[in-house]
Image (cartoon, rainbow, N blue to C red):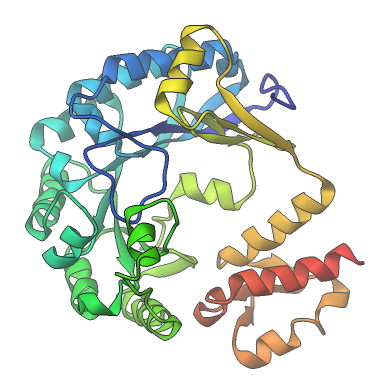
Length: 384
């Protein structure tokens, strides 16, 4: 089903999807596998087989970034993370000072785990906190509590991992009476070098989606969504964080290099169930379910679940959308200045200094209207 070979791409960014979780969060519609006993050895061996079956190792240069996402990669355990990296290192190599990120949940962070992660080569952790309110965490079906999240940060630092990102979810339903400013204050007190904030969305095939369909949960109003997003923008900016992408904040020089590669529209290799990849001309994605992905690889079959060639129009639409997602912005064509005049008047975009020509970026208020702004400009380009 692949539409273009990986063989000559020269990937410098690798994503590995680790599907295992202890429990499905109420809002989650990702491809996950609930396991009390995680088959870490079988998973790592299957990842190595995928590299072999796809002949993908030949397409990798020295990697600049390696990202283990999920799911919950920390569910592999200390031994499982080390074994996975051992299998990967048989096939790929990292450049000096590569960014190697592991997503983790607070309950999995221990001194022994952190020591194992460091031995494996992990130098950055993305910690799924989501809230510091235990009522909200319970409603979200999170396994940890607020104290566990705070302890996890201390353990990471004590274990020698100073580069870490904390995730929070905003726009919880009003009925929860969540104190959003208190969550932001607690977040800042932990002084992470990177922060990701995500607005809660209701997806149909999730516990939250079913609650909503039965009328048991009401989605947060748009006004609350906007208020909490803008409040966080102000508070984090005042604390010295750079709001460099719609959902991401970083201290100077600490942007997430792996995710930034996605926003620059560069090729990346994806391994694991449901993992997506992009070779510069086409996107592909793997079988979503862990069982079907692993079964294909046992039979020596590429676990590709589908692929899509990007047209010139697709590329342009993505360049516009991705450009507007970050503060680096989007270069304008001559005929587009008049089109963005209204956006400027509303305070949704601002100019970016660029000796090569006119460039704009979204303001925080503009990011709340990102889809509409991108669609407007993409439509103009498609008719020019």
